[in-house]
Image (tube, rainbow, N blue to C red; front, side, top):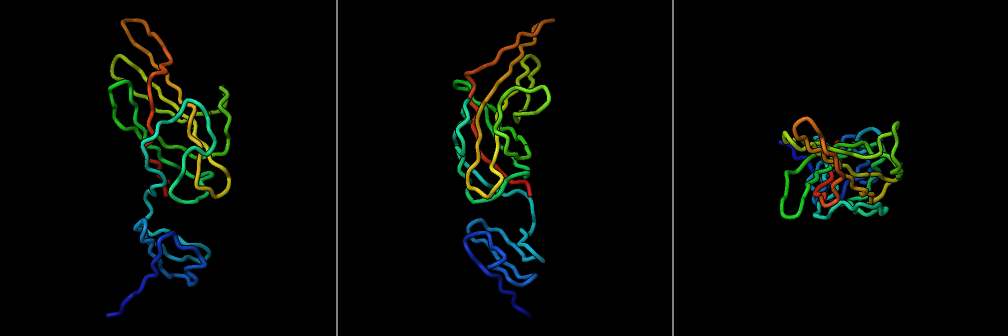
Length: 181
């Protein structure tokens, strides 16, 4: 029986590591297998690639490049998955998943034409809650991205009326960011 040897390293292999089409490399740090294609190195299996894991909250202001990723990567025009969790005083709520295609627009000004924030909505029969945040990246490879500008809109459905508020005591924690492959 033939033995296939796979190159090993502690990072994602590049075309300079894998020079022959069909040659394979294994990233031992992230337990991921790659293969050399005609002009690039391709991850075998696809799925999601973890880019960030932490316990920090998303701030209500914008601070450029406030999230440090676990690798240098160009995320422009890529789809990311954000795992977020809402906390109010002593209550911790379920984790939610928010998808977004990344762009470079840092604008937070309200617009009737353009979507500026990534959001998710919950409804428990009385309270309709929308939580939002801004996320953007640079158009070049980087190990940072910007996440911030948290906003909340809460509607209390009571009888035939709705009382709306923008609750500022709610904290959103950013637990993980994945690249959707």
